[in-house]
Image 1 (cartoon, rainbow, N blue to C red):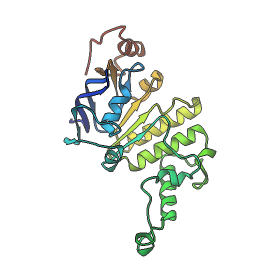
Image 2: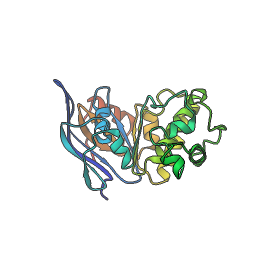
Image 3: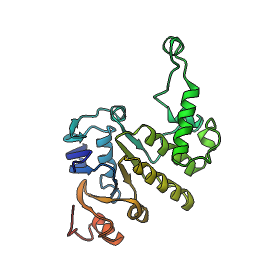
Amino acid sequence: MEPILKARGLVKRYGKVTALNHADFDLYPGEILAVIGDNGAGKSSMIKAVSGATIPDEGTVWLDGKEVNFRSPIEARDVGIETVYQQLAMSPALSIADNMFMGRELRKPGLMGTLFRQLDKAAMEKFARDKLNELGLATIQNINQAVESLSGGQRQGVAVARAAAFGSKVVILDEPTAALGVKESRKVLELIQDVRSRGIPIILISHNMPHVFEIADRIHVHRLGSRLCVIDPKEHSMSDAVAYMTGAAEPDRAA
């Protein structure tokens, strides 16, 4: 099976600091790939490089077997790569529907949309409601309520629903449960599994080892700016993963 998203030899330098040192990456269709590593290991730099948020100095990225050169996150989004950042990148004062369609608003058909550029609010609200219901977020009653009125778990749910709605190829989640309680974290993990069940592969960046080992199919261990190994959570323990990412031990079985 060929990776749906692949990178080879990624290099990214910030002055004298090398954030990525010839890093490799593979994401296979339909899987949840967890990316773990110590602070400063280069996890975020790698994800930004494959999602268009930064332009690598060297290296190549392939999507569906074709070489891609994203110059911005919008270009990556246009081909189906959606990213949910830890900060969520949502506007608290806007409604749920407005947040889901931010930057890709639907306009009314005919002259009202093309000439007068009126938004098709009804279509956007229906689409947003349908997507929330598909992912089991029926507890959100009013699609027009401001995002700032939602709980942390509901906000994260809206962000994941937005990514699942428009991410036809890959969904990237950066620390999706970092600021959530136990109950809300559980709901987000269920959402992630629901998205994967729809056939969309997921990249999960997380420091929460129990969550990683619960839902990940494979674990990419990143250290000192490059991929150290890829391990199977069924064959390795959490202690093994922590030892690899911190340098306390070297892997003996790598994918």
